[in-house]
Length: 178
Image 1 (cartoon, rainbow, N blue to C red):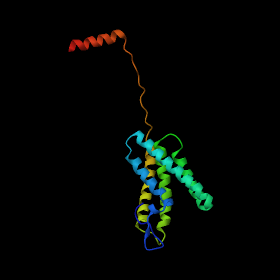
Image 2 (image 1 turned 30 degrees about the vertical axis):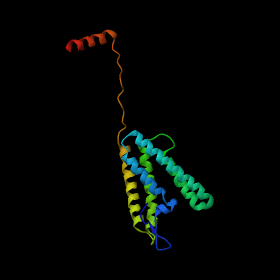
Image 3 (image 1 turned 180 degrees about the vertical axis):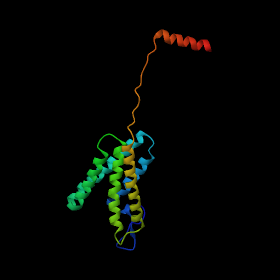
Image 4 (image 1 turned 135 degrees about the horizontal axis):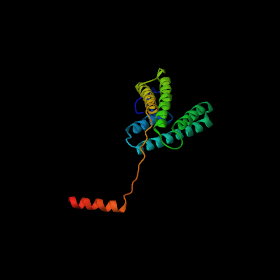
């Protein structure tokens, strides 16, 4: 996001941070970096929420762009809708997170591969392509691991009430030992 991506019209290179429409792949990568650091259910839920917000922003931006340039807007709107569909509108699951990583990794890999083919491409685009490919492969492995692992089931808890005379007998036995 902070490295030179392409040569601009002048002598200065263009940095993706200067062009907001180019930011979603980088923001998704940042969101998945935080998801990878999550060590609790709450962290996964927060990551899911962040991915839903990003998907909504991409879809909304696609709708706005569609009003100005329908050809580009429909592509962006479709990508945003697919990303929202992958993460879902409610609930949080590891399968949806892995599927979203796979979808955004594939989309970003195609995006940066097209930019890498241009003569104006600089080091930032090539690094972003490698990162996107890594996210795609990581998402594929993650999704396969989640699907292959057996579902976790907790054993049923059994609650046993002590009869009043049993509880009194236990307390008496404990006092006698002390």
